[in-house]
Length: 222
Image 1 (cartoon, rainbow, N blue to C red):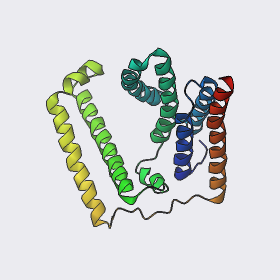
Image 2: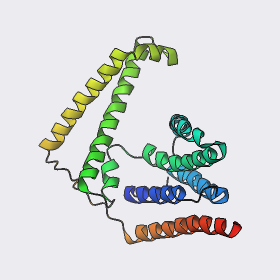
Image 3: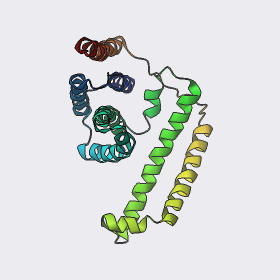
Image 4: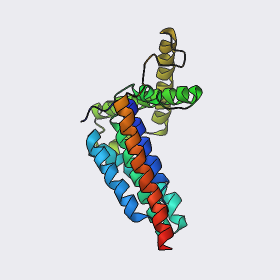
């Protein structure tokens, strides 16, 4: 994988997602270009295809329930555009090193309270996934193998226990952060270097050209 700094990864992912999201409706050729860019981005980050596919499947099922009432033609474009955006952002999130989301987040020009909430949410999600993994291993040790065994094991009581265990651990982690001097800010520097800024400006220029061309092309055709 190319050594791309975390802030630059996040900025490039957002540039691709915003450019694709602002495309003119029914601009299939330009959406295909963004789809190719998304696949190249996933290859560059070397995301695990199995994990990416499972996550995309769950997300697209939910999105299809919202988009299909709009009609097949409109829903197909919206779903494909959502797929492109999800491939980019999921590739970034799935290849993110542990406990590094806050480092990438610090480079965004958003208010500090929002950064703190997102940082704590990311920490809680990591704790929740770790607890789920421990419960799955416990189920396997008790002979509950396979999907059916896991469904029997994950009853309502176990889901409640998962919530309580993860919440208790999250409180202990937050208390440890406070003891170590955490005040809502990370003591790290996440500014972009000149070469990274140039790469980001180039990517932004390409995204602006692709998105604006989709509107100009549709006006010419009409």
